[in-house]
Amino acid sequence: MPIIYQKHIGSHGILGIWRITESVDELISMIKFTEEEQAIFDKFKVKSRQAHWLSYRVMVRRLMGDDFECNLVYDDNGKLQFKDKNYSISVTHSGLFSGAIISKNHHVGIDIEKLGDRINLLVDKFLHSEELTFLPAENQHQYLTVMWSAKEALYKLFGKSMVDFDRHIIISPFELAHQGSFHARIELEDLRRDYQMNYEFSDDMEYILVYSVDEAILISNNSKS
Image 1: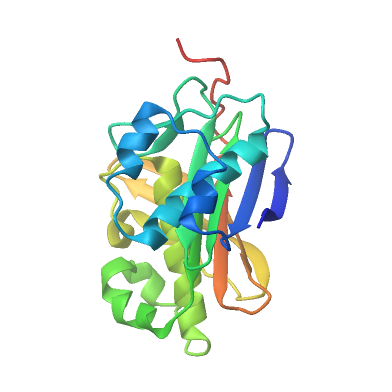
Image 2: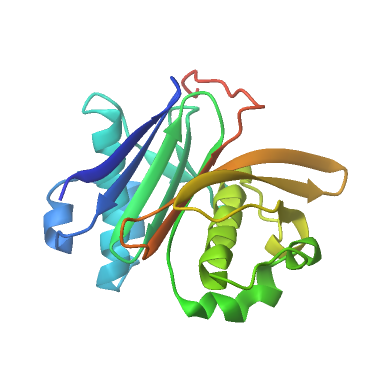
């Protein structure tokens, strides 16, 4: 299946969601591996993991166009990046879907999560004490999943491994809706950064998408040397 959802982020970015209906072999036929990608793919033994990994790579190529060189590598913190471009990229996958967000000018982060009651068991592992004071009693698993997904997206945007969900990423209170936005911040030693988090549920309310763009910091879009 092609990209089912595509959204332009201002004049500098693009977001896409792919619903995975293809087999692994079908996805492989849509992509030409670099040597580095082939080595990574060969490590995956579970078909669902292979499908996720392949689908967002196919999607990135579709989003950027045939003339764009989509050579993806990982930095020392495990953050995905283009090898030859200073664009920011973030990818995600959950269940039937994979997603990607790409920006020429700003750091970005994205996350998709499938909803489930298990999230209630993880409260002590990812909520800051400040967040516990406003956690609602109604629709709590939806609220918590949005918060978890927001922290995942912000962690990817920030791109540093020393960030802890329950200590350094703090969500501000918000009213739950089908789609909307709220604020979050990263507090790390003497650093504080504020972000707007954008979210929307799928029509069947089984999945949540959250993404963020760091509008405060402009990155170079020149080719890497």
